[in-house]
Length: 138
Image 1 (cartoon, rainbow, N blue to C red):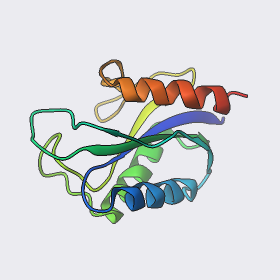
Image 2 (cartoon, rainbow, N blue to C red; image 1 turned 135 degrees about the vertical axis):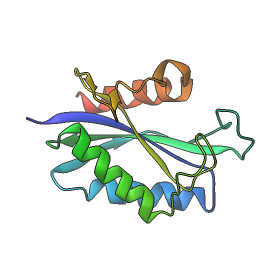
Image 3 (cartoon, rainbow, N blue to C red; image 1 turned 90 degrees about the vertical axis):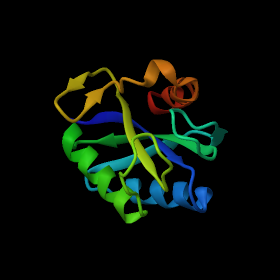
Image 4 (cartoon, rainbow, N blue to C red; image 1 turned 120 degrees about the vertical axis):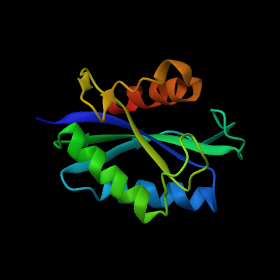
C-alpha cells in the first residue's frame, strides 16, 4: 500500500540552505519512496527553552510504501549523515526531520506518533501542509 507522508525539514546550524537541499535529495533516494512536492523554505524563530539561532524550515510530500517506523529510521540516518547529534532536547541542530502526517492515517507507538503531537503548535507546519496537500493530492 502506498501512503503520502509529509516530512518537516529544519536546520539552524551551519549552511542551512545546503542542509535542506541535501536532505531533500537524500529523502528522494530512500528506497520505495518518491518525492512528490516541496513547500517554500521559510525562516522561523526557534521553539523551546534553549536560546539559539533561527531555523530554515520546509516540508516535503513523499509517496512511500515503507511502514512509518522504517521511514523514520531512514530519516534518522539522513540526520546523522548531516552531523545531527541528539544532545539537548529542542537544541540547535544541523538537520531535523520529522514525519508530521500520513495522509488519511494515524499511527502511534513508543517512538513515533502521527500526526506529530506538535502540529497544532507550529503554524509554519500548518501553512506548509496546506501548500503541499493541494499538490500531493491532485
